[in-house]
Length: 366
Image 1 (cartoon, rainbow, N blue to C red):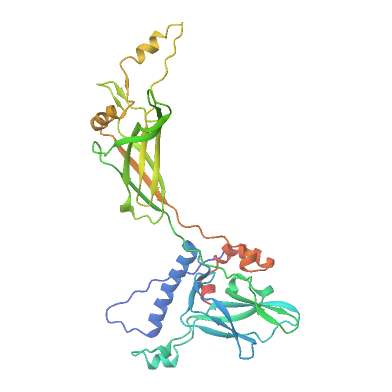
Image 2: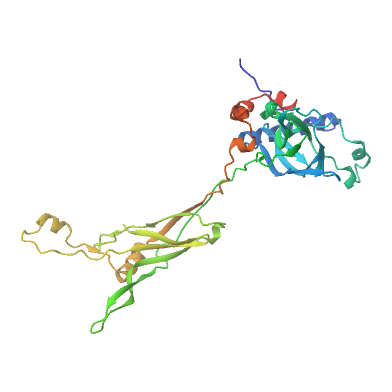
């Protein structure tokens, strides 16, 4: 059976048209439908976004009689906003199980038929007394009857079958996970004007005529500090950098072997790009004469092996460093379904959440 979705409307008015309250309400409802479709399609927003924490209300005699729900915002499986703008006190369910069982408090979307009288009286002079509880309602259901369309669970009460009840300490309300996209930035140093400097490391060297060795700096390559503070990263991103520009000069026969580049000192505001110069190869004396063709192929080539030769070569070749950085969003800790809803029978219902999103607009508003 093919299910056809109701078309969303776009309202247009003409000059001098007499508008009624129904016209404004229809336009507002259509805008809300677009927003709900967006929440479902792109954000998959289901659960508690902020607030809506449940806490027990104990009477003077120490008896657990009510549940207090803090103000907050949530989303149901249809993408509709569950807004509670003031704290609410919910009475405990009347029809409680006689044996051991669990009752679940759910919040669901529900719009009022009309504005409250106090809001109409104070339409131009709103006070704190006219604040409503939002577009929601609260309902108690047995755990076996809870499903995804019923609403968002906020609390669970465990009954021991002997008249005792308590707020379940293991219950975790499902949380809406906002989609945070990675922050990506790229840049490059100035060609022929990159601030190269020598890369020194401390090595042990033997002093002639002395006993022992000392640490002395030795140049092993070149490096340049890259400033990425303009990207505005809040954490150290993943950096990727490489040397750009021609590495061979045909007129001078100079060749730069860019095979040993690395990054170090990464931070949210920058990093250091380093390039190591390999030492000269060790020439072994062999009886067999070298290949004349291979020797002729490498004749006249000058390999850049030190910083003194690199600086004029980098300016002449206009070498520079290109970089790319990506800051991934913070990973939200995973909460297993059994801890979020505490009922194995609800797992297949939650897994069928994608099927719920295929309902028609008429079913959403009802």
